[in-house]
Every structure is written in C-alpha cells, then in structure tokens.
Image 1 (cartoon, rainbow, N blue to C red):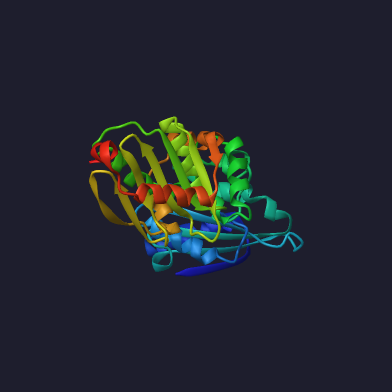
Image 2: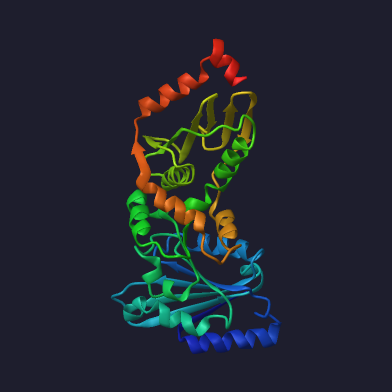
Length: 331
C-alpha cells in the first residue's frame, strides 16, 4: 500500500502512521533499527528503496528516505508512506524536501525516528566528505557510504580516510568479503610460510581494489604493489609471494575466479560482483565500529604503484614450471 501526502508535515506523517497501524495492524514493535537513506540523485531512488526493502526481511526496520528536490522551489515536504507488500518487512517513509527545507533533512528525520532503536544512515549515491559531521550522519551509530558511486571514487575514498570516525564504513569494502575469505582460507593450508610481498591488480578507479591492497599492507606488514589496469571490471587479481611459490587469485571477467598455489590443485571459485542488496544486508548485521575496515583505510598509505606490464610479468613467472630445488620446495 502506498499513501501519498503532498505538501505535508512530519506531524501529519506521524499521525497517518498511527492511523494505519490502528486500522490495519501494521506495527513497528518488531523493528530493530531505523535506516535513513539520503538520496540526492533521485534517478535510482526506487532501486535504493528496493534494496532496503530486501534488507528489511533480515533486519526489520523503519526506512526513512530523504530525497532532496529543487532548492529554488517553494518550501514544502511531499511525503509518502509505504507499508505491506510495497515495503518488504519494513515501513517506508519517503520525504521529498524542496526549497530551504532541502538542507534541513535532520529536522525532518528526527520526529520520525523509532524510539530507543539504533540509527543507520546510508548514502547510496554521492555522500559527504565527512559522514560523521553531516547533520544526518550525526544522528547515526553507523554511517554507510559507497565510494564506487562517486564521480571520482579514489579521491572520495582518500578524503573519507582522512575524516574517518568510528562507525563509518563503505560498500566498496563490503564487496570484498568473498575475496578476503578466499585469501584467508588459502593461507590456512600448508605450507605455513610468511608472505613476503603482494601485488593487487584492478580497475584504475576501483576503491575496492585500493581497500584490499590496504588491508593486506596493514595486516601482513609487507610491501604491497597496487597495479591499475584500464578497462578492467573492479578487482582482477591478488598475488601473494612466499618462499615456496606464489598464491594467486585471479578473476578476469568479474564472475569466476581461479585460485592457484603450490602443492594444491587449481580451483575455480564463484566471485560474482556483489549487488547492493547483499552488501547492505551484511552491513546491517553489525552496529559496532568495523575495526578491520579502519585498518584497511590506514593501510592505504603503505601502497606502492605498479604498472600493468609488471602484473603480466608476475603472472607469467608464476605459471612457469619450477625445476630442481625450487620444484622440490613448491611440492
């Protein structure tokens, strides 16, 4: 059910919610958090609401969408309430703010927050340089941005690294979960040798590639070379060097990866690029600060630049059959 409330106020929206609750039994008693979506884009608004609706099936919540309209229009709020099949397991409140009210999102959101429930703010398109200092970000325990949606993803990531505050996170980081899991699992297999260096290859403006390289640099305390490849699809490969040979996880097509390492059979792994819905669901599972993401941000300072030619040479060397003592060590 979708109810439109043109030229409304937050008090009228609240009264309508109570009326719907009493009339139709749509309650907020089981809501575990309030998810505030700040969308200045508007072009993909429905996609973002759909992702929140899907996430609400695992995390029942109240979704408040702040969509900023023209700042030159007359001051008004156009409200919309979605419940039932149009809202997943949540109740969705869409607030379109016009004129001077477009910069007063915090004032519009506060009266609609669930009492005593955690607050998560999500900027699915362009987000603030410092999420924790944004008026709506100040309300939240967790603040989710997406550097990949920015006009200049790497610059946005670096800017937020400098402004990082506990509780910040980025969907560019969440998209790496499967990559990180596969790399950690590979290191749990013999031989148990120290990693001496790493090379991370990916799209030139891929913030996920930057974060994975930063994560390796910070936790392994090794030199990490970041190689930028034009016309790639996000992450392409990770190479971990150790005495007996190289561990390589390579995904050239954005779908299927190949994991190879000495003494183990080569394995094909499903490594599809994760969609926004799955990433949002994962982020809503925790409301405490993500210390691993913070460490990966710190690791960005430790990266060294490489070239695509260097990456090709490393892959070629890793594929060469070993002989003599080297072959014995790799078996």
